[in-house]
Length: 304
Ligand SMILES: [Zn+2]
Image 1 (cartoon, rainbow, N blue to C red):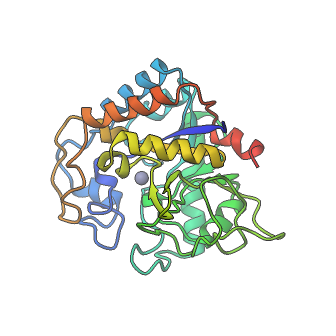
Image 2: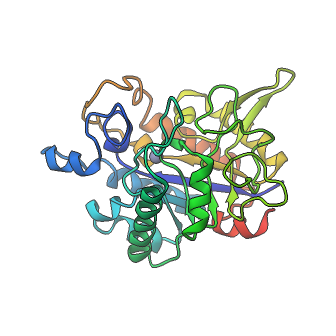
């Protein structure tokens, strides 16, 4: 069986697109949110500590994609993740959408993207004291041009793409892409010819329903909240047969607290969370305990 990377996205409730960082959010960005918000904001620290304990319990080292502004607003949190032996990757400066969720057109210039992302990379490197070489696009909205920029500013891999029959959050047809790592072509996300990029893409797991060629996204995240854990496990196991694959979740998904209600963009977003999601994560980790787990930074040099 191939290798698996467990990945965890570190963001809080106000990083979701209905609250900040998207064309339809209530606050333009996280800076404006902190200017105007007077209530409690930290719903992230408590579930992150539970995730760290759970990973220790299963003896798993994971790759954590951290929104860089978390280093500013949660003193000690990113440090504690790194100190427990996990890899730190970058999940954007403020978790803003880089391409429009509908049109897939860029929402910022290439120069802005490179400056902000390099700033985020350096902020994270300063606090975690390790080199940050991995990126995951906020809200998984990714364009081919972004990977060219990531390569230019020193990233070795990206893990944002989900090939499935329900949605495509990229600006590409994803022709030929599956659930195993590959080198995308220049200025695109399709599989590269000879002159592709050097940056590696780690796409997410999917379950190809036998006989229908219908691909259900099963890497985790929201689908972990909405689908049964056995469906997610089935997709992970099938993806493992194809090559290295990805499982991911958010600490805030296992929070049992009620988050502030801001904006109406996604009323169903937090319906399923807390203990029920934690149970699903435990079920997956338990059933995949014998699969060899690797950091993405190590996989980027080895699995192709
Ligand atoms: Zn995210």
